[in-house]
Image 1 (cartoon, rainbow, N blue to C red):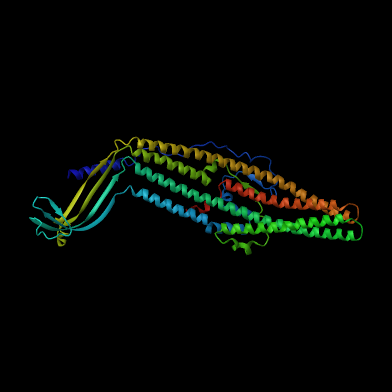
Image 2: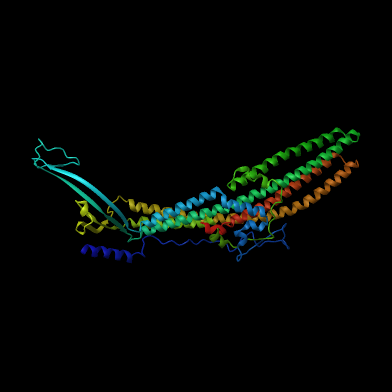
Length: 501
């Protein structure tokens, strides 16, 4: 009875101390962020349009950032992103890591509860006494003749029961371990969300590149036809004796140069389609028929909501992951600190034991035992305190990683804002360049046919037109990809999938 009273007293004390745990309590670190983005608030177009989209601060409606790809109003892009999020292999791998982390949390949580084992055994033993009084035993007794044996016995023992053990978490070490496991799980969840952000951006960038390459191929082929027509004019004028063979050679060289560009673009188109197929978890050529037909580059929306810098701390998965890793490192200081204190366990056994199987279930065959066990590392050569120091150092590293992650995120957004804004300026200049180069080609061809200029001016004008048109397509692509990079830097693209974590 005193042992039972002592056991319940220890359980009561353990429950009373359940709210206490050694080690520091975690609080998300405070970091200073600017009140607004430097790249927002400068001169904006008077009337934003698809050609001159503006940047805006929008804190109340984050839908554009959450599902940013829908802002391009491209059904094919929406379909590709949706299928990638359903079938991408890197995303499936991230999901498997979540299951692993969740199971690890379950392992940590199980240590808070008692363990109960059931056992049953049967033993047959033999003991014999020699004349010198030394006892021997064997499970297969031999004859005692001539051995000086003065007595022997064979015994059966049947046993069945339960064994229980419970290590009381008086100082909170186990609870800190569960806290660390929970934070580890959250870090893995944020890692999956980071994969979602990167995946959506990668699909968007590849799709924009594909449409850009297809437009560049169309421009190259159109210019090639123009060059062939010009070369034919030069040939006829040469045969008529109006010009020298230099014009013909120059025209043919320009035709060959453009012909060389076509297979390069065709190869890049195929490679981009293959990349999109792999991103969707399919074989490389699975999307060839679907995407081979040229289409326009996704058009940027008229306004882009970028929010406030403080929102990054709540939205970007890499920052949230760093915060969770810091939480786990802080909790592990408590796990290590708990080793400084004694460990108290309650153990007990309950069951039946009998030499006769028919009597095993009788109440008179019962047995039980219970009692506490206390262990305390009085001397370990400084191992425990060194481990505490290790965990403190790991927490400091995690804190520095968190701060570095925040700074990197701020830099990425500011860089993306500048790139997006400056690309708008470049695009507007290229629109003018294309218009003027087309006019120059038309004038040069008319003057050449009239015999008022040489063919070099025609070639120069045509090259300028091709370069301007190709550069404009690349600028439109860059404007789209810069916006995608901005959305990625803002941490958009994972919220609608959060329920699947």
